[in-house]
Length: 130
Image (cartoon, rainbow, N blue to C red):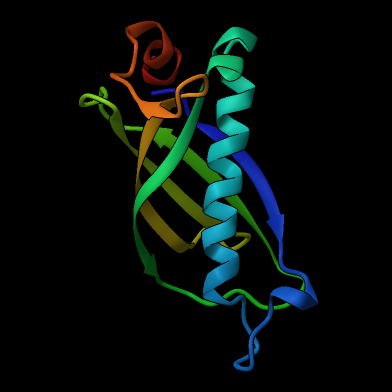
């Protein structure tokens, strides 16, 4: 498992009427960290040839995050891909060490040239599974 971490700080624009980060911001952060992980680990030729799309989000909102607060996002791929798909796990942990949000997202790989899904090549998956 190759985990990847990134910090996120709640801006005023991401705060809802209840005074905490809104759901849309959490979804965007999930996508942002997954994309950052891909570009940090994938060799340039893979990043040029393939693109990932989300096909499912499962999100548990456990604790609120207020304006100006920072969380550490951590993501990893738990298991080998199944065909064109794999599951990615994400957790956002506050400064207090408590998980604020956790998610399991399913992604599918597309060949950029054709726009069609393909089986995840073993060499593409390998760096994310070690």
